[in-house]
Length: 289
Length: 214
Image (cartoon, rainbow over all chains, first blue to last red; front, side, top):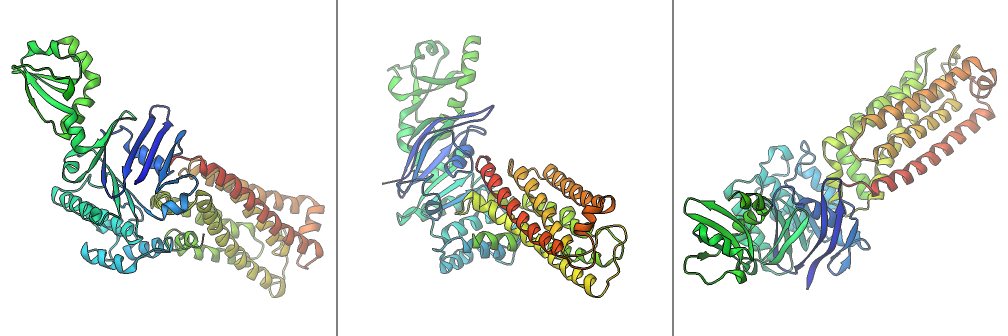
């Protein structure tokens, strides 16, 4: 069952456009939403949550149209924009007192359990918490109202490697029982290799890929070889880099010819993203070669 | 809606804003411009409420909650109205004292009477109808809406005071330390205008906020 269906979402700003953004998140999985800074990740998530008004397109959550059932759907969504940085001088307890009122399904026992698990002190003020603790507080609020879909915008940026690893483990733990799904945006692709089941990749407001992580990796290969082979590899090439030994290119797996001079290996998500992002520059560089 | 109001008064409305209502006691100063006592709300409470809300990034916090945008506007309007009514309630207590104990009339400006309270309601209604729709065009720019709303309120108060000084018909209608039918009608009409302007402010603001990209 699809928990989130985004279809042909469009939003135009004077200097940026989301173009027909479509993807689907299945129930009980983690989807990583990747893209470089300014690619449209936050705009997409805000548009899904109606913080930004879409020009066209539809968003369905739990099978319901978001526009028609906004209140009902939001009861089951935990949405987090980066770390908690609102009400910096208020104590956690004060904020919780307010948040609790909005959710009839609030689970006080779960809230207390997460506070204790994350070592969060309700008497502390928000600005006394580290970045990691703020993310954990936001998650505590989301999990305490029994959110079934967590939409998290850059939850790991700003965290140290240990805190990041901790958080990613928690994500995996959360989906273990199968009743929660997570969509989280990041530009730190190594986070996704640790926990994401599906990847959606956005570039300049357009979705380039949206599939299972292993499918995405299988779709591309890193190809290395001498420069003289470069001209023979035009079809299916995303972009390439020249180095002292020859070239290194990202190619679609299906387009790689059998050639003894070429070394082929599996790319990382970072490779896929970096070579796609270089695609615009490639023409110019190509001409110079 | 109840939860949104709880959020407003628990997280956004600073307890010091209630103290601003005490400035209404300045009405007890003899021979003064009594509207100034009420205008402290426009000078202090309202702009600070919006500035605090902006500093706290309250609009983003609220956007993550299961609420409709029009209810967010309604809750903010109700917060303002509560503070304004509080300001007028303190003024009303002082007006009663003026009418019963400190009965010396104001020889130059409008007397502290029921008509003054009615006109104060109109002044706050005008403040809200300028402030809220302008603010909810962006949901973050507060300086210009606050300045314009204050200018309009001060201009209204100045017009009333000048009318009382220079136009005998206006003075006959609103001035005087003895409660007349005109004073009572002005109070009732003032409350009605206040309600009407607030409903209009809500409708326009809610429609504008719906189109804002956060």
